[in-house]
Length: 214
Image (cartoon, rainbow, N blue to C red; front, side):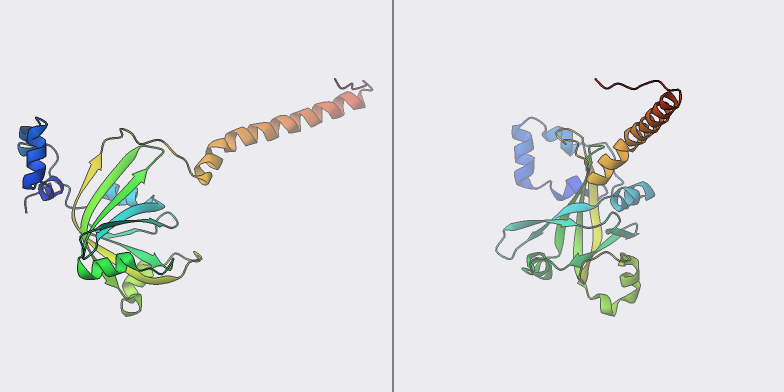
C-alpha cells in the first residue's frame, strides 16, 4: 500500500463517485500533501500519551459498526514503538462486544481528541487481544501504578495509517483538573488579598480606629 494510506484506504469506488459528484474528485486523486502518516513521531506519541480517553470502532460479523468510548488516566494508552500502540482493557459492563468483534475482524478505527486545543487524531489499525499474564513485558508497560480498575486484558494495535483533522466544529471542553489549574492563579490572588485585608484590619484596630461595616 502507498504511503498516506489513510485516504488511500477509503478511496473506494463509491467514495470516488461521491467525490466526483461533489466536484472534488481530482482534488483527492491528485493529493500532494503529507504522505508520511504511517509511523508515530515523538510528537504523535506525546499527543496520545496526554489523552485520558478515545473512541474506538470495531466491525461485527453482521456488518454493523460498533463505537465504544474508552477512558482512563492520562497516559493509559502507550505508544510501544513507531507503529504500535497498546492499552489495558478495564472491566466494564461485561458485554465484550469489542473483544468479540476483534476476534472476528481485527480492523479498528480510533479517534483521539484534545478538546481544549481543538485537535483530533484518527487512527486505522489491526488489533489483537493480549493476555497480559503471558506477556509480562507489555503488562509492565501498561501498569498504571495504583489506578483503581480491574484490567482483564490488553489491546495491541498495529498501525495502518493515521490522519489529523482540521479544528472546525470541535467545541473546546475542559476537564475538572484543567479548570482547577486555570483557576489556581485567581485562587492564589484571592488568598493574598484576604491575607492583606486581615493584616490591614489588625493595624487599624491596633491604632484604635473603630471599624464600621456597611
